[in-house]
Length: 232
Image (tube, rainbow, N blue to C red):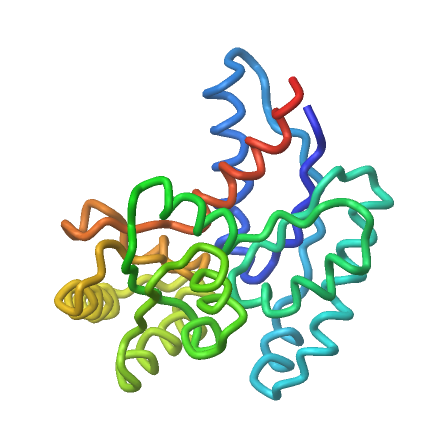
């Protein structure tokens, strides 16, 4: 079993899910007292969030690259960035290390293709929904038709993530608003919805809607375990 390196803390609320899901997946596959070999570098999200909204992505890349290098020095065999948004700097982080970075959009794209999905809705931060680093990768590498909510809906999705979910707050009215947006994307032809922010799974799940939801935390965690156990 290889050692999985996690860059977490963005937010720590969703990083908990990564640790839990990776270990559950290893236990399910190997049984007994088996658990994952994990190294975690959990960064302070407050300065990163400030830099995001200031548009200083170079500085965020430096912070995450330092975290990745520390994981490699510690013995990690691969690295995961435990957030969708910060994959905006994934290429810079990958260039800073010699071990592979398992990209969350690639894992998600492979899952969607396997399920035969052609048109998919994307929920996430405004950065993820509006910029090309994520949806462009899904379109270019996996030939997916990616649609996002309208401007006012994107504002709701973004604000709930930063002002509630990253703080561990789950509100019924926000859940209802998200489900309305999911229904709107379905009406536009979405065959499934990517929960393209690692906190969204704290708010809605498959039991809340008949639309297929693709939780990127679960998908990313599974991809990490696939990689860690590949040669065992």
